[in-house]
Image (cartoon, rainbow, N blue to C red; front, side, top):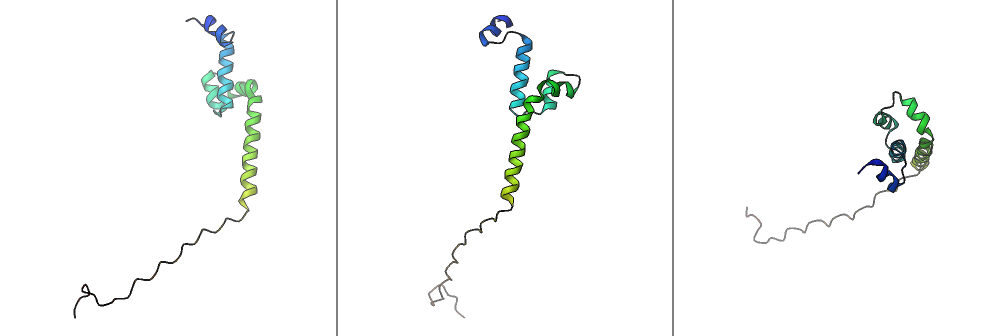
Length: 102
């Protein structure tokens, strides 16, 4: 199948749009920008950052929210572990037949 026909069916009008779509999906899925940059064969990371930097803004906000949550819950006391009941002491020796003779 040739790209133009497949692209039309998928709503992607050019190979460049497909490339941009793949990069967008990768970045929003959490793939590091350095990996995306190498995959796209950009000469520099700044090229990728300039084109797709707006996508990393939400990821940065999510990271800050995660760190904030971790820090605000870190100073809360940790509940004490549940105490198990002490086991009953073993029964005293009653002189049964299993007791060794002196």
